[in-house]
Length: 443
Image 1: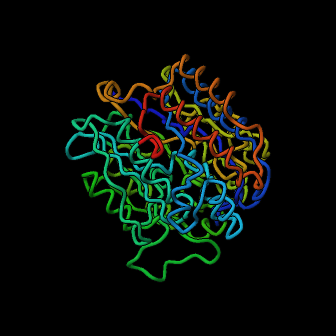
Image 2 (image 1 turned 90 degrees about the vertical axis):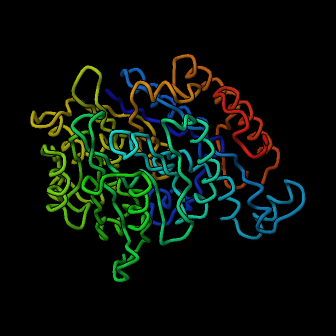
Image 3 (image 1 turned 30 degrees about the vertical axis):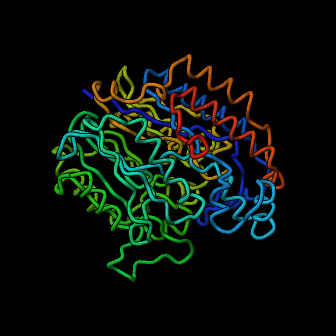
């Protein structure tokens, strides 16, 4: 027996709209706006509590140390904290914004995870993503790896690998480009790795936006995780989808157990893909395919339907955990209603949650979580301080209420007092979660 545990990224106090992610339509559209860090964090926590109240096991991943003044000093800015922040602002505001970025909130990019039923040594394998495609995300890697090693510390059950080399040949964006299928969570599965670029094929390009996931990274992770090659499938993301704003596969496709929900323009070769996935499973996938006649790929990006979570409920059946924006889009909502009413698939309910602050920066419900399938023994070996309980939820809400700013504008990113307050908040957080020594300033 095994269950899927969702480890959500706790949205940090520096949540802001910098528009640093080229190809992320929502991020670019809201660049320079005034964000609401407190509302963002509370929305994320309410989503976690909602899943916990459904009877699911929910975990928390801490935010990064921000602003990253050490990074700014590494690239030549000097003086006290105020001088470093002002120097970056005057030289290049995008560097200042990168130092404050709260993008680790999107935990789907934290790592790729293969559960023990799939791996050659029967251990859970985790590879932190190098996120080399974007500077502001690449600076997350060291703290993410440290956090994962502190949470999954039992080396007899978990292997947390080093990130792949920080070079575009091995560009890795984590579980946002990975779907696992299995008859049930505890059964051996088939792992789908989706890539946008292949170094062996220079002709594989997009016209408008850059690709982020390299096939070489997918192949390396499959080897490191000791996966059976006959139960691994590599698929190319459709270049037209990337140019439409589908910067990660989880913006256009998702799955749970044997359910596969995707848009017809998600993959370069959808038909052969279904056969390749179904054959090693020994059971057919339950395919829920949206067509252009249902809604366009641009509607998919706007509504983030495919960035919903599909979860298996303890009482049976599945629920679609979707953003409010999906309900507000007429054609997308009609598709959801048809899906829920269709007895040929196990999704028998849909819930719509408010994560608007995340959505405005280009991340929906599924972006906020890292999926980890665990047996009961493996779950008991996880650091329990990050497993959500009613008590932990209340403590985190109180922490956010006391420490987070109501709003944050670009002009405030040069404020050294705000920077100091963020570090004080994170110092208290590691006590709440039992992760002392996580951040560089604590060591």
